[in-house]
Each structure stands twice: as structure tokens, then as C-alpha cells.
Length: 174
Image 1 (cartoon, rainbow, N blue to C red):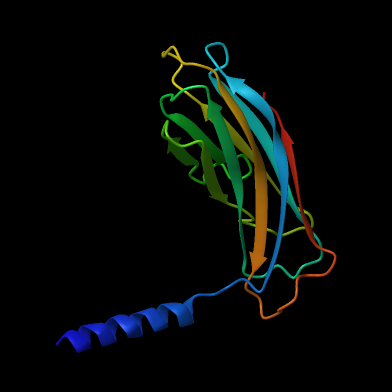
Image 2: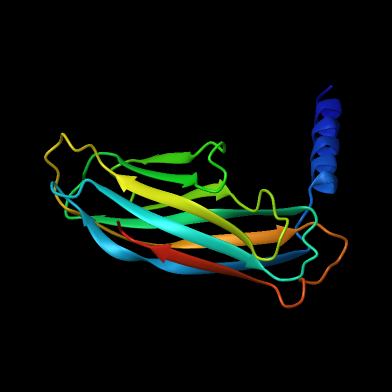
């Protein structure tokens, strides 16, 4: 009976590998976030992100993401910090919110991108908010990081679309 269960597990793993699709091409870019400090006066930081996928394509079966890669350096352990990414281009898309515990000094938060590319460039805007509870007396927390945008395609073409690029612009903190 154990061999039957093992055989089913192996078959399921092989089916998962066979049905998974690895992007045939990918493009990405990143831009640093301006350093800032969360303290009793500034309990929230807001960054605006503009990401563009430029080029003639083809961009069929396009997928991708925008990520906030945030580093926080406290002088001592602090309560939870919240990092949120929301799409301004597609406001009906659920934002991604990550509660980062005090013991963690680095967090990556992702949100799907390139949801409806119909023109060149395919432009999308996002908002990244980093915050802590304003009612608590907390030591300063230095914030650094970068915003990354990634696009990939599952098309039959194995080469990256010619003359295509991803560009990211970060404004803030506001």
C-alpha cells in the first residue's frame, strides 16, 4: 500500500512540473526609494510608482508584478510595520498588505502588474505606503529599499521581444 501512495505522489509531482509554465522571456527594472525615517512626527511614508512596459511586443500571455523591497533599520526592536502596495490604474484590484514583525529588517511585497496591456507603452501607476501605529511612542526607523517591475511572457517565442523594456519611476516619500 505504501508503494501505491508513493507512486501517486511521484505522478502528481511530475504532472505539476509538466503543467507549470516558465516564462520564455522576461524584462525587469528597479529604482531606489528615497531614504526616509518613520518616527513620532512621520508615522507613514507614501511613494508613487510609475511602471511602463515599452515596445512593440508581442505581449500575449503577459504576466508580471511590481514589488516593494523594503529594508528597515531600527535602533532597537519595534512593533509591526505595515507595507502596502495598491494599484492606482486598476483600483478594483485588491491591494497587497504585509505586516512585517519587529524581528524582520527586510520585506518584499508584490502586486500583479500588466493586467490590461493594449497600447505601447503599457503604463501602470501604484502607491506604496509604509506605516506604523501613530498612537505608540516608537524609536525612529530608517527606511530604504527599491521598487522593481517585472514582465514575462509565455508566448511560443523563446526570445525577448525586440526593442522592449521595463521602466520604473519612483516619487517620494510624499
